[in-house]
Image 1: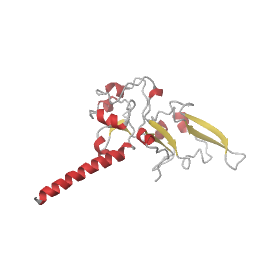
Image 2: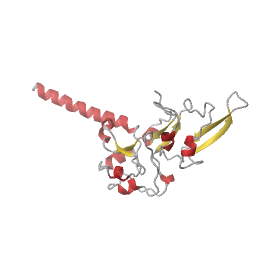
Image 3: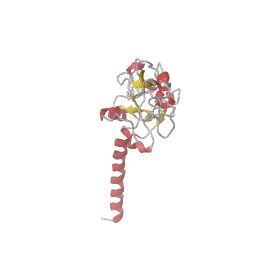
Image 4: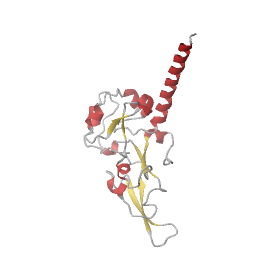
Length: 206
């Protein structure tokens, strides 16, 4: 066997391994558009045509990068840069030709993920008055509510703590986009459907 053939075979195996590795790793990180039902089903149906990306009036949808492995080119949302606005007519869903994005009748039917708050970073939990995520939420007083309580060990000062209702949060990411806590780590993020299925609920740590 020629050395070149061995090298070519090893290279092909490495590429295949990287595709699987990055696809598996990327699944938990990609926030999908409204109407996506399950990562495996979505990736299988999506033909990477870009029609949903073109249809988004807020430019929230972007093609996934090379680090997504097999899912490269599929639509995803970087909520910190531009969250989903939950358009009433869901033009991204209407534009999908394959059923990768399925019909959505109302905002409350969407399930892109669920917001997760890092209480160690959220300034509201540190005693500062901040209701940005609460005021920004399109499902205010449903997906996010404010829990008014006294600070632990402090009988005078109150905490206005945001609380996520996992059943009602649709994962649009507007709270992430508007969070006032500076980079590189914001105080709130969206746990994708894949993360929730695998039981990953805690905020990421640096």
